[in-house]
Length: 422
Image (cartoon, rainbow, N blue to C red):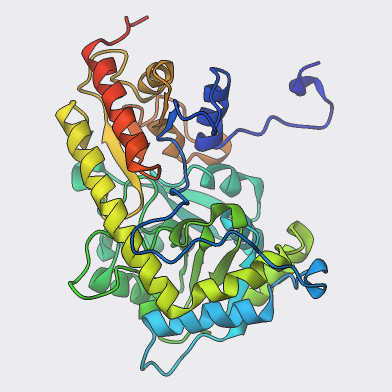
């Protein structure tokens, strides 16, 4: 009996990464098989990096840690997160984050789900393209209305403060959800530009929900400064400014399997997130929250971040230059993240289509993610006339350099001898 025939249940779509991984498994993919190259993965390599602190291999679990964690998180971890944000972004500022401004959760999507469940009957803006998991997240909760905002590749996916003001006032937005740096384009809003975004949100009473999970993968920064970015730097009053930030160990600390993440914002919002968590998920892992506390010490963060920047910048430059040589175009070289957002329209058919490229690459044991998955369309309310991003592909340079090099060799063979178009 198929899943569609079970009474009472609906078909829930898979996110882009889950879809492509499932398709690869049907062709024999296994994460433990070194012959496969997973450039579709949404996680960074998790092993040792030159200059990075040693990786954690053992976690001690005390008797107290066998119990449930508070829904808002272990108090010591909440304090450690607040202290880190103050040290990185708010030195010398009167308003400082406190533990009550932090809500711990068991994964990034859990944190975002708590936030979505906490929104009222408002218009929520979101960008196209953006993170694939936003689509179902923006559809499942019916209190708010999701308003799409299309970004143009010809403009390098730029979106000015004037554009922001026009969208807030013209569409009546009370909230805006975005990833920064953006997954998949790598576009970063930072510095004076980000400061003006926060000021505009404050002035026009529009909440910014900013997914900052790639905020330590920054490839443009001032010499001598730590390459990190956060809107926390430009918040005036941590309890009044309508800015809610999401981050965690999954990307910036390279511990995706720990599922330890957080939201940072006004304490009234954090209280609401905890209330939502009490019925949605019940809270995260207490032992891993406890084990995460030393990872947020400033010196540890500095070493890990600098190691990430050095290793991933080299991989970014390698994958972009080689794919450009093979005929893939880039609307912009990524400012951040570990993704390269390529346009394959100039390749021979069927490789000139994101899905065609993906399916052909699977035959060479390489996984990518077609661009159409980032055309966030909650409830499929927009008509399906083909995705604006149908000729795009997201290439992850999260894997090791050796894996990337093998994938590039296979891409070259595939492009030089493309399969016959059907």
